[in-house]
Amino acid sequence: MAHPAVLAASASSNTQVAAFWVLAIIAVAAALGMILARRAVHCAILLAVVMLILAGMYAMQGAPFLAFVQVIVYTGAVLMLFLFVIMIVGITASDAVVETIRGQRLFAGLAGIALLVLLILVVGHATIGHAAPAGARNSTQNIGGLARLIFQTYVFPFEVTSALLITAAIGAMVLAHRERARPKPTQRMLSRRRVASGRPTPLPGPGTYARHNAVDMPALLPDGTQSRLSVSGVLASRAAEARASAVPAISGEVIGTEAAEAQIHENGQEEER
Amino acid sequence: MISPANYVALAAILFVIGGVGVLVRRNALVVFMCVELMLNAVNLAFVAFARMHGDLTGQLVAFFVMVVAAAEVVVGLAILTSIFRARRSASVDDANLLKY
Image 1 (cartoon, rainbow over the protein chains, first blue to last red):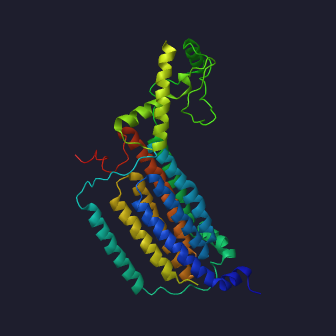
Image 2 (cartoon, rainbow over the protein chains, first blue to last red; image 1 turned 45 degrees about the horizontal axis):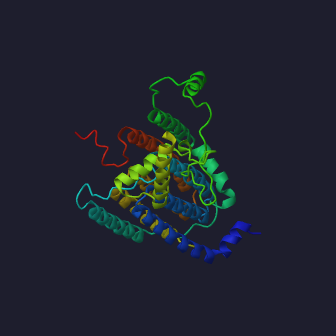
Image 3 (cartoon, rainbow over the protein chains, first blue to last red; image 1 turned 60 degrees about the vertical axis):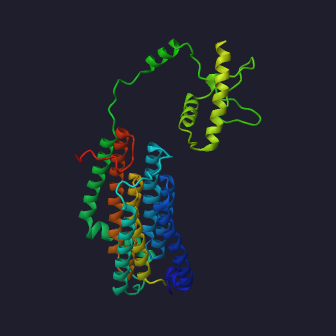
């Protein structure tokens, strides 16, 4: 009796052809979108699409282990790392529009087309045979066969890989490490500072109203006035920055914070009185 | 069944797109992503050739490429973070300390 996986593979060959073309078109479109998208976040999401599709293609080619490693390592770890660095660098950081070298984009495009023509000619002229009959790469023996290769034939390169990974981890820690300029404040120092500041309690939260419960809405004090402390100072300074540069980053946010800042200003004057 | 040649052609197209991205983009993060795309395209070609030969060695090479790519991304992003900390910019044009 034939193995169920082999049976399924021969029965669903039409499905595989359809899946290949659909996935290939989506992958190329996502890759093109990745090099055209302005914002780094969009690039990361589109790259995730390409990588998931490649995982599907590994699975279609009888490489289930690589498919899962692709999802876990690339989509799970590498792209998360990218997204964390985007969070550090700034989510709105977009590419500069100016060309530093004149005509660079044009020449890059021409070089790309030339490389594509070259590669397509090479692939077209090469005799790439048909798939070998399902043997060692069969899905039931795939992981066992890979384990045999890794731990018997290629065990020394595999060990060297561990040295590489440890070096990379230590290098990342050394590069990302920052020396502390002043000693870390202890709990005793923090509590003393807190009591000495005149406000030992936590700051009030933002206001919650029937129509707005955003964090830029000031809370109301018992006498009906608004509390200036209940809105983060970052929001007010951001609104001022946005007004100064007159380029609204995200229109809703700017409008919201401007309104809040105006309220805070009135409110502060009231509090001073 | 789809012939391995189709997979290799797709890998070539993705590799070229990644290469053009490396040349065109000025944000160092996006340049890294394009390098990742090129590595992935090569992996796809390796897996396709492994299927063509009915041999698992190609899949093993793709596995090693993934390991090296992960290490490369970790160190690259750490360098990027430290450059951003010092210069407040992630553009590849601003990091020219070694030029003069």
